[in-house]
Length: 210
Ligand code: 13P
Image (cartoon, helix red, strand yellow):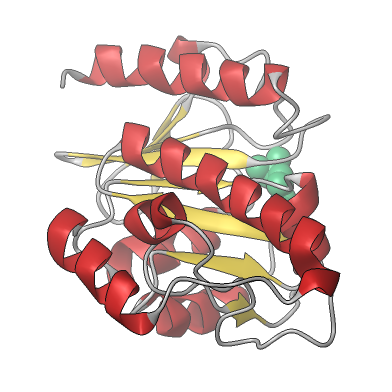
């Protein structure tokens, strides 16, 4: 896809996420890998009102070479791109229900949300670990996320929110939406000891849908 088209698609997805309440105020940031660098949303911008021409442009070493000042979470995004060759885009949100799960002390940090539905497994994968709390913009989160991202397409930052990668921008946005839905189901069912997908069912989904 041409860079201009990618810019327009990013702004459309961001506005859609904002309109549906996945992001409020200036929370959240989105990036995309290009052939020769990255696009990332500017710091302190609202996902609801981005300008394609003003997205921050980074070179392939994550240096700022154009557009507005990049998100302070460049380290968070870089952690995924360097850990996962298959990451073509990264979406970070403070979406309410996923963030709620990220605030629960008694969940399994290796896999706080069990495989309740096929689409969580298909879009997000086998598990989504919790990464310890870091102040927003703290570069120290990069190695922690990088390590967790080795075998996870998405992580939950404790008391902060989800970071979700995908092969394409569309995949990453769809996966971020599935994360929020899975968190909602998990919270709805928390007291009910729900039936989860079995390991065999999860293996079948991953073998069929990747
Ligand atoms: P930026 O405005 O710098 O992208 O930060 C927003 C955010 O979501 C911090 O985690």
